[in-house]
Length: 358
Image 1 (spheres, one colour):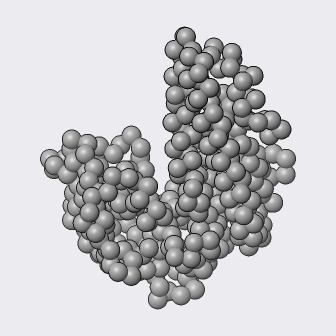
Image 2: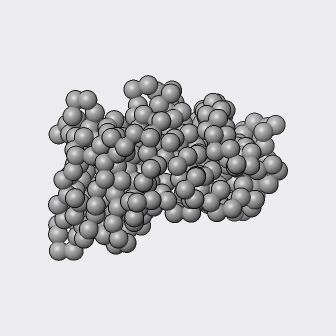
């Protein structure tokens, strides 16, 4: 959905912000510390109910204030959506005035792709970052995924508790392992099916950059691909008891990003890595729009020009203009985009200074 009006109140250094963003491209420019990234953080908060700085959500409220609020009207029907955070840690989410308890409802309504320096973790970080990337796509495309994922997590939690208990109730263990196997295999199937379809869109998009070495995606489901999870859990029970957790399963899945036979992070330059990370995120949004025609993605890109030469910046911007998405970009100097946009009439510029937008 498109954000038509945005109001931010008492959020970090943003006291009272009211803007009517473009339905297409929005560029937020200003000096470091002016509040550009705080606007992106507020948009992320609106769509996730939390900050993208996971451990810092309690700091988003201005000092001396009791709460902060982000409100927007979205979609053709101008649906009101608001999120409020209080100093006691309570988060109040409302859609059309009705309280919402499930963050998944908010995420489904407003799909957001966020690209900042942390996005490099898709290439450089642990498998957890790549699972999060993969599961974002599966969640938005496959209706069954969230339920299967939750049941898997619940069964996994109970199995791990039993492993650490010292004395295992065999019947209880068998019940939770049955549940884990049943839903883990569903999660694996949905992930694998999604990635096969997504990789086609990613490959086509990355090819448009021309000078990036061939990049491929390799899915690893988290246990031996030649064996059932039930057999693997049975064989690893003693080892799992010693370690106190389940070593095999969908919680260990990974998507290796490779250039030839090597990890892309070991071969590509920093600028090339940013192109690959951006292409992964952009292709994921394009795939969602193609698969779910009623969906419209919101892209948040923090300091997009960093580590990109003009040629590659122009390529990324061309892709952004070609996607049916609403885009928010931050930069220091707006002149970097001079002559970049194919349709400047779709671009709206906002100067950010000391927490105000003009």
